[in-house]
Image (cartoon, rainbow, N blue to C red):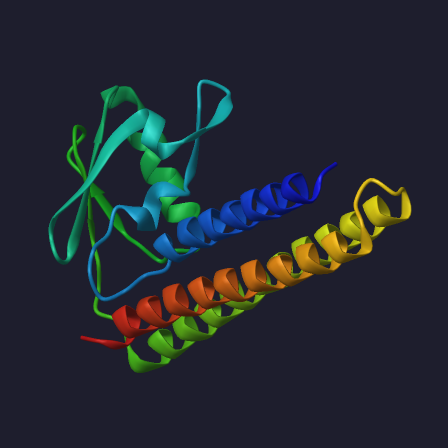
Length: 186
């Protein structure tokens, strides 16, 4: 594997870590309704666990309400059960065709819990980025040992890997900070 391949592989894996963080942050409640709050829900229908996005359209027509329109009205009760069984604390109301979820305002204590969860997610992502850095550095050392790259190439590759790590950790910090701000504002 060339030095360029090592860097491309590391960057690709770091991008995936950022994508996972984005999805996790979308599921964290703010004071506003956001379809991302229920996106991660899986519903048991037709004998298998199915993501809610495949069963219904999810929207937020008002700042305090999420509306779920099942494609098949027969799945409405299953979607309701999944929402109630989740740890989101929502109480869905259904008229058989549309499921409405009113988002209650967040208390100060709940907001602080959300912020600490955001910090945990950010730290987990940083750890995975550092693990990717470690793997890439090991690969560079191995390539130098195998004589496919020179010592200078290995050192410059490690420097570039460190720059990548800093860049992605900075992205994680920015994303976490932005989401914390959203959670803490009214």
